[in-house]
Each structure stands twice: as structure tokens, then as C-alpha cells.
Image (cartoon, rainbow, N blue to C red):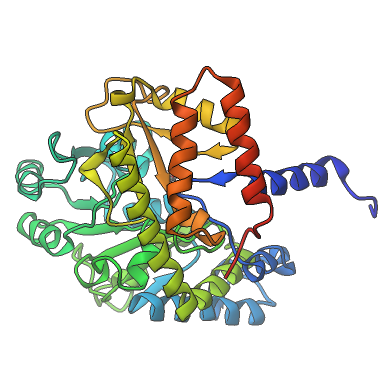
Length: 425
Ligand code: DSN
């Protein structure tokens, strides 16, 4: 039992080397601090704690209760929320719990089209959200790459969804939550914002505030928020449920109680208290001025990167970005997303292929690639480095058959990145 499991730990060492020596441009990834990593790898993984702090189904939860309360209080302070549940294991689980809490099977939902930058859990037919509920979608305008809220309103009027969902995994523009709330109110829908991607920028006031207008907000904790892999649910203001659900004493149940029950026992078992501790550490970090400097730099870096791609003739959707990511249509370069992803990885540059709005390719091939600056900014890279990154990406993409050029780029990338820590500050 004391023997080191070299099969696994050698692979972990290899993965650490990969992360250190390459350029991580996947928009949904980031590098956590040593403190977040320590909490995630702690003995808290040993503890069962089904239930909520002070209302558990197991003994010995005094310490994890304090940890979970810390995570809840910190995230409420960070976003100005009045209520939060930090147990969802991931963003998908947070969305599943919200839908279980506010919908009946067969109810209508309206979300942002996956092929325009939306997310699987917002109604895709291959996901529970599209199988259990009747989904319809809104998208972006072909000419601008931006959402037309008049069209969202028209679709909402036609479909009369019970839940209107906003948020995306590949949309680089800010959201008009105030307008979306007005639309939701017109049709009697609840409004859910899934802010998984830009939540770190929202927390520090660099983008519009969804908590002011949306009934419910979900996010992952590992993207711009720079915590462990996980999810959470929040509300700006708790409210009495509009479905007439009552407590045993005959009073209307609060949404917070319905959502808590939808997480456990509705959709999950025991919470991952080691991950909740790591979330608490990450939220503590996100409350600092250093983190504000970080997200400001993430946004600056994304703008410089997007502008430079535009200058080099790449089809950046909506011609720029308000957040940490950009979606690039490669058709003007006669490339597919699959070719770009597969070639860039040979130079240790990691991106993901992505559908672009009105794509003519399948999801396995795609016409686009998605890039983000959250991870490279954590490594300490600044605006000038973004110009270098675009130069490296462009050099590879313009020479996809030229192994010599690709090898040269890989060496340059490795040389520049290997000396930098994964987490700067
Ligand atoms: N897989 C995440 C992303 O890359 O955006 C969303 O679930």
C-alpha cells in the first residue's frame, strides 16, 4: 500500500509538464493557485455530508459545515447575492438542478442556440435539457454576430417558455439582462443566466450584472473564476415560488428552499467537501485586489488578441470581444476548426474547434475555433505577449503542411512558457 502508483503519478507528472510547456488558449480552462490545489487535494475528500450545513444526514460534519458556510458567505459577498448553493459538482449539474426545481417534464424552455455559441444544457436535443423539456432557441444575426433582442422577444412571444435562459460558451459580447428580464416578465417566464464563462469578470464589475435582473444565476467555478472544477447556483433576491408549492405549515416555499432540494436530494448525493473548500479558497482570492488586476488584464489581453486576429484577416465573430474569449470563423483562411485544432496541438498550442453561427460543417469538423485569455493571463502574459501568441497561431495555421515551421513554433512556445509558473498571482 505504501508503494507509489507510478502508472498514475508518472502520467500526472507528464500532464503537469504539458500544462507548463504549452500555450493554453482553451477559453474554459485556467490554472488554480497552490492554495486551491491544496484544498482540492485535502482529507475532506473522505467526508460524507449529504444535506446542508447544520442539516446533515451524517455525523461529524461540524468542520465541513464551517467550510461550506465560508464558501457560501464568500461567494455571496463576491457577487452581491442573497442566497447561494455551492454544492453542484459542475455547471451542467447546477443547470439540471435549476430545471428540476422550476420545471415539470414537457415544459417549454428557450435558450441560446448551441451552434451560435450556446451550451448543451440550455436545451440541446442530445442533452437532458432537450430530452426532458421542449426547447426552442434564439441566435445571433448573420451580419453582426450579435444577438438581436427584438428577435428574442418575438420568439419568446411565440413559444411562451416557462424558462428563458441566457448565457453561452462561445459568445464574446455582453448580455442585456434588463431587456431579457422584461421579455421574461412579458411571457411569464423565469429568467436563468448561466454565467459560467465570464463570471470572474462579472464579479469584479467588468460586465453587466445578471444578479440584478435574473431570477436565478448559475456558474462554473473553474473558468475565469479560477477555482476548482465545479458549479454553483445563486440568486440576487430570494422570492416566493410562483408554482404554488407550499411548506407543511401551508406557506409558499421560497425559491431558495426549492433549489436547495433540487440539488440534494433532487439531482446529487453527497457534496464534494474538498472541492467546496477549494471553492471557498478561490472565492477568497477573487475578493482581493490582485484578482481584480487579473481579470482586468484578462479582458485587455482578449481585446488585443481579437484585434490582432482581425488585422491578420481572420473572421472574428462580432469583430471583437467584451469578455475573455473570441470565436473565429476560419473559412476566410480555407481551414476547418478540426484542422486548426489538430495542427496547433503539434506546436503545443491548445485551442478547441467550435461551430460558428450559420456553420456549414458538422460539429466534429466545424468552421471555427474558440480562444480565450484566462489561462495565459494567469501565467503572467501581458498585451505584447498576445501579439506574439497571434503570430505563433498564424504561423502554424498558414503552414499546416510544413512540419519544419510547426516544429520551430513548438520550440519557441516551449522555451518561452517552460520557465513561467502555472500560477503567477
Ligand atoms: N465545456 C465547457 C466549455 O468549454 O465552454 C462548457 O461546458
